[in-house]
Image 1 (cartoon, rainbow, N blue to C red):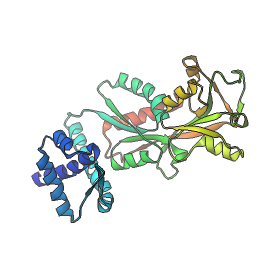
Image 2 (image 1 turned 60 degrees about the vertical axis):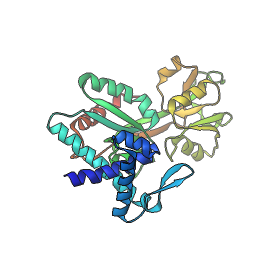
Image 3 (image 1 turned 180 degrees about the vertical axis):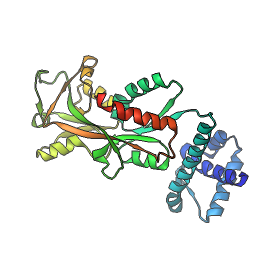
Image 4 (image 1 turned 45 degrees about the vertical axis):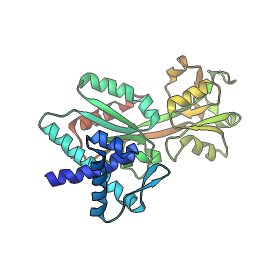
Length: 297
């Protein structure tokens, strides 16, 4: 057991050094001396038979060999944490932390309401939210960095997701734009006259696909990865965007929200670790999300 723990400490040392970009900071987190962490890394390289780290312009990076083996090291670390979590759960010492990876628009629009309602019934459960995109989220769940992933199924066709709900995307405009709130729908051709602020959540964009299908090309002025920042840019009159949004938001921001023609939709799904490896809290929250998804915007 001591031997296994020492090996795992070496893996943790490598992960922390890469994250902190400093052996000194990694040593502080692990409560070891700097020479001890350096020796761990040297010992790990000797055991593996190849160097793991290069220093390039004050930046620590993995070697080619290190890049090949690092995903397995991360998985071992996460599996160890899952084992500890399960042990604590069985012995009633669980901290009941649920780790969720999701896209920015879902973390802004869905999760506050879902978490608030869930914690009302389960006050001892805490959450860690990891914002990612539709490419990184399946990897975060597979590696064990997250127990649950909520993402756009259309953008991850190979992902083994369970369908939750079809969301409608709407045009979000500055109030200075000459469009009436009484419009039944806003034609995409009209929008090409104005600068587009694109909310990027992965390689696939439903709005860009619709523009392309209609033979139209939007004038992309800006690309952002955060939905709230995108709304603020629109509010300042820098352009329009197309995103899933609560209609009530136009009462709180200087924006106008209109449906598009054609209608743009996306399918939202939930992805999880193997149920055997999931904590009971995460499994319970997954069932809660599936039950209440249709009530969300």
